[in-house]
Length: 156
Image 1 (cartoon, helix red, strand yellow):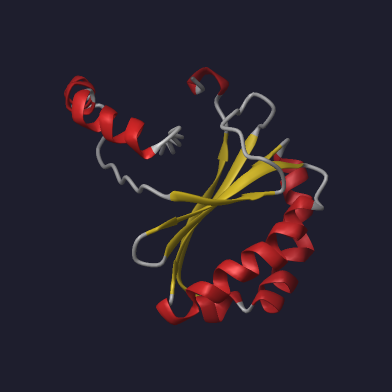
Image 2: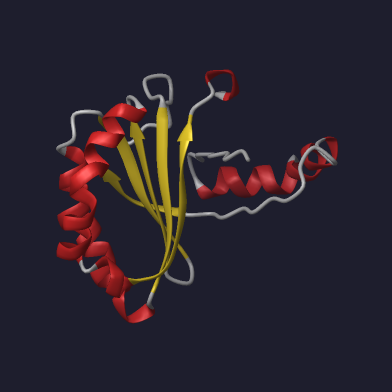
């Protein structure tokens, strides 16, 4: 399985790419994958510091794709900003990240880490405590995600 993250300077650049280049590139890749899912998220705010789509200083990316109950979307966003972000920002191995939103109360939390070991220190005891404090279980209808070891040769 591969996870591909793309970052666009603006929606107009994305729309231009889709209108002018996407179909030609997709045709050239025909047969190289079995299944693909694409989601477009709008940037809402940074996790820790000013996000840059630079991966050379990170070995691992953690992403969480959250579908949130409609009536809890505002609370979920507030808890990301007031509970989860400060906790991640306080972890020495966490470099930077972003919080994005898609239509239909879907959210993406992406965090970049120096190493799996550093991410493991954050996860071990803090996640359960933070989830209780943020009332995550009441907010989230569905949660998927992954921990991705970065492949430097694939970074462009």
